[in-house]
Length: 308
Image 1 (cartoon, rainbow, N blue to C red):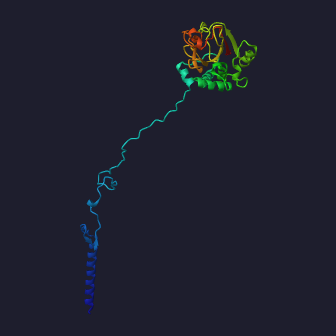
Image 2 (image 1 turned 180 degrees about the horizontal axis):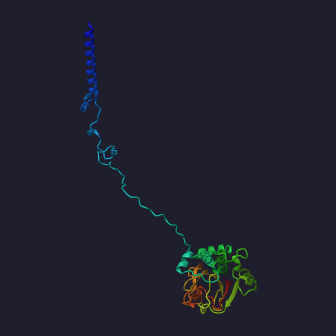
Image 3 (image 1 turned 90 degrees about the vertical axis):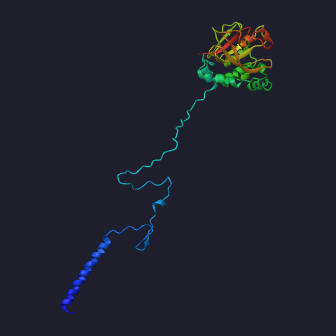
């Protein structure tokens, strides 16, 4: 081959290589048309999922892309009902029977006893209430520690037992039964009385006036008073009791034993009403129509009272 032929051949090959390079570059950088769904591109089947195939439930995830110029919506959780505030229960102090009665005026703190002593005295007296004969008989046995004790003659031991249970009298210095059928006019019984109510701590006053004629407004009985009632010639029994409370109207009460149509019982009674002398146990014990159930107080009474 001649030199000139070789030169022309080399020149042709160079031009061909340049054209091939330009074609290859154009194929790579010129955008290709998007193949429709399901068509084959370079021998591979498209796996794109059409938009209509997405589920249409309401609880879809928040979108991750938005159109230009719009902000992504914010999904907030809205409760179906608002919680209600339930107030905590407040602690309520429980009042005793005596405390409630103080609030209603059924117990008025008067006399030498402290308020605490008056409350204890009243509550102690309630322990001994026995509203039937059988119950009062059992209570009499409990108080006197005597098997055949009877409620008809347990007044003295009952009064002492109430004072002891209230903590006003000591249980170590005497027994409640020591006041069984006691008589302040007898020397041996005076010793027992002075042991229970020493003159250093108690006043002792005797009134020789019938209990239905006494001026209770001028000299009222007070809570804690130990009272001995003298029968006199018109009466048929003598009696002992302790005052357990006084109300706002000056009426005086005691838990004591007394006779009824059904027999002796132990219960709380009103002793007198200072505004009406016909009311109360003192009026009944001096009333002739009731004499068969017991009469006393015609020779007056005696009081032992704690010194203030």
